[in-house]
Amino acid sequence: MGQLIVCKTAHGIVVGSDSGAVRFEPEGEERLITQEHLFPVGSHAVVGSAGAVDATGLVKEFVTFAQEEKLTDIDGLIEAVVPFFTGRYDDYMRKMCDKLPLEPILNLYVVLAGYAARTPADPWRLIIMWNRVRPPKIDVDRQVTVFTLPRRLGMEVTLNRLIAAQTPLAEVTAAAQAGMEKQAITDEYIKPPYQFCTITAEGVKAV
Image (cartoon, rainbow, N blue to C red; front, side, top):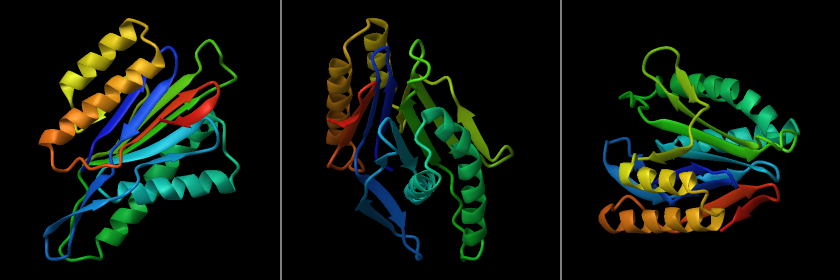
């Protein structure tokens, strides 16, 4: 597991991730790999993964699905992503049951963020989805403003303070980047290259 940072402000959304991920070999040993976690969906939305390495595969499948269905509007993407993720998660767990020993998925997260042009007074959309051991299998948080995984409460406090102060998006982004780089000094699982992007009315922009 690497690091995910998501922050919704009055001026736009910041999404950031490192490239670290942990894969467990059949014999049980841990192998640190690098992979992308964030992917644009159309011009004004980003979908990302965190937690278990397999979440990235589910996210890539959703990007392909959205392209095939010509889904670009963030509200349409949100309407589609929850049932899509739920169905793909069930498929994945059935495949896992064919493997011995069974390796349960405990931390599977998907984030979807974007700009809704049709509601300019309230244009920012951000949801977090994760799996659960007990039903409902997929839980959803649609009210989140700041989210880090693994949880970094100090970083969340800093970002919430910047949001409350109406800080420009560039400064919020810089604070998130600095926080991730600082965390990487003591966390061997956080690996460059780091991916950061902003979402504004102009679209998704890599930082």
